[in-house]
Length: 267
Image 1 (cartoon, rainbow, N blue to C red):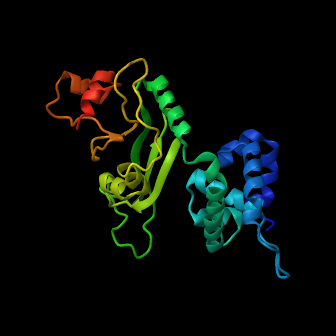
Image 2: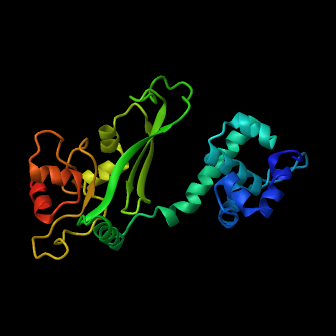
Image 3: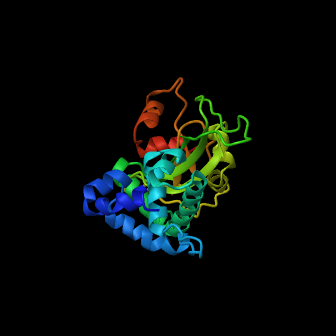
């Protein structure tokens, strides 16, 4: 291709890091690192009929799609590639990104890793023995073909659900992606790999320990979330919003004193 964005604009963007960042939402150094890591996975062989699309262009097309949310039709006009070709490029490149980056950026925490996360929660929020905050997010999508209303959610748009556990500084620790948008958060959590493992006690959490600075009894490490989920030994939720006394209200809206949390764990 000699007239698309890659051939006409990319060289200019490379000379202007600020423009490159605005266009792909990524620095040149980060782009080069990604290309180095996934280049072989997305490389295709040339044929005697035509040259294959380079790994560089495949990555640019995918990053532009992810950064801007533009349609394949719009990208088709920019890159002079077929719509079905762009669809295939985005899918295969996203799979390559996931496979290459998963172990580095979403590794399953070890027992020491959970302890480090809990220590950070204690430092940032003064919430003891907390190893993650759980919530779900509806990601807006176009209705997949032949799915009826499976992806149509209560907010009146089509979506797929991202369920995630985040640490005290907001990066994800664990994610579960792809549940139908019509499913409510509580059911999503119970049926997701995350929920099943938490309720079964299979998250690899360290054993109970006393709260920092106390000589009290050992307390379990917990994940926190809103009141829509069923509580268990390693899942803590706030009191419901009705009929709260002073201590319960404090527990629900802000970091809690150890004695308040201890009382709430006696379920």
